[in-house]
Length: 396
Ligand SMILES: [Zn+2]
Image (cartoon, rainbow, N blue to C red; front, side, top):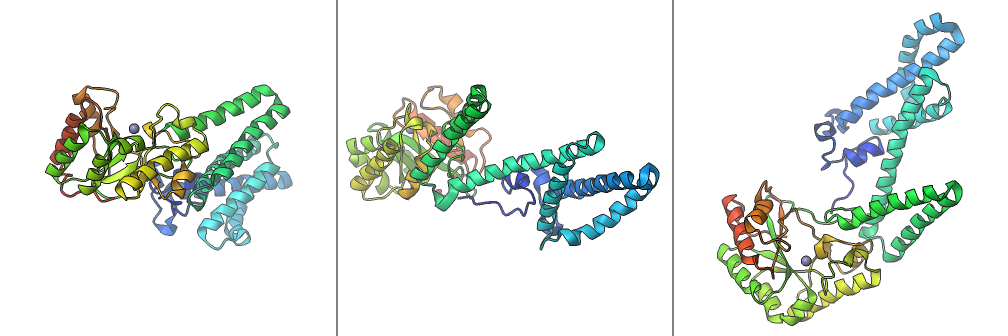
């Protein structure tokens, strides 16, 4: 599970977008060697802060001494201020000093925002910097809430849902119902992204790739009386292990197959009791719990093994999935490669989508119980052999 990246960023913005593992800023987010600050952030602050001091000092001097003397003294006075103020501003570390500058200059910008002309422009520019940091702070707070004790509980999430709806209501009463609608629509689209995007971590963490340089095959929607035995033989031939994300009802229908998967050294993952692929994204907390714990029960009763992994039907978790999986000791697993083999029968195209541009750490999603299941598995096994990634079975 990823915690907060220890990037020693000054501002919330960089903490969100410049963190280790984040690619948004590419090279710019590499740490500056001295002080372990982000190079881009260090450049920004070391340019912007003196510039703002120059503007603030210059304004005061020009007002007090007139344009000629004020203008002449601005540069040296700003330099002296820039040298002395850090002691006044304080801060135990370089990071905290920059952070205090951010606050000091924001106070100045609020005070001078109506000054007009160049001073007003600088003040508004700095308020813009503060605004994007504020948004980033809210994002960090959201993330901390969703990771709280590894799981913000169901009751807590209900409170959050009610507060957000209340927010739209308050905005409607205060500013008119058009704004309420806009707020509601924005919140809904954020919610849809968190629920429908299979790799989104809006509502909690999930395993999205392996940490090492191997690859992992995951096989969903079984066990299947036709495909499972043949797939197990294929995997044995190559000496590879997989995770079978099985459906609870099918485990009860074909208990021998579930036991055989474990016997041959593979893992069983939880893929819900009935695979409600059209409605899991909007299921109530109670139904979500029934689906997940029902599948766990089926697997445990029949094989004696407690699953470690959960995968939502078509990857659609809902707002209440994380607290339930965490309570059952399950970690959610997504995937990096899929070929839509459950909806298409065009095997060459499916294999191309699965194998083109593979990287170490990839998690393959394939299905059983389809007319082409064996061809797809064989193609993937051939593909990773050709890429040299079948040397040892993946460990999870
Ligand atoms: Zn499925």
